[in-house]
Length: 114
Image (cartoon, rainbow, N blue to C red; front, side, top):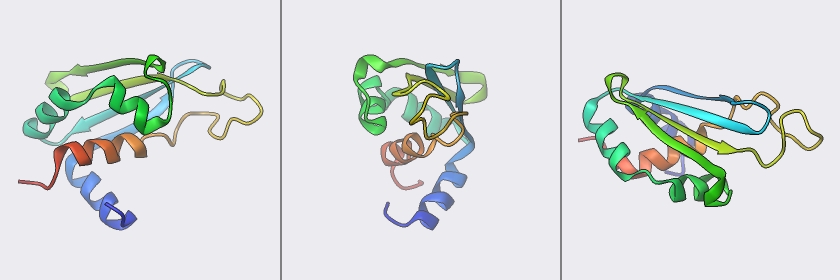
């Protein structure tokens, strides 16, 4: 998807929650909660640490976890920050604006709504 408005509308239709935050000074964690079981299952069975690494331009070894909580239809992804939180050159001290690459990746995995 190339249109930001279309991307945001698509994301809001597929995800109940999209958020990122610091997981200490050296890592970021992302939570994606899906609106339906089918999307959650498809994303969970397809998402790999290598895909996350590519989306965030980090080494695969920097992706420290891809886990899920099925009752909530949630996927949690964690990866090591390129720069520690608050360090000179850190563009997002709180890790609060990092969900877009994962949302785009998941929308690509999910394809058009059925």
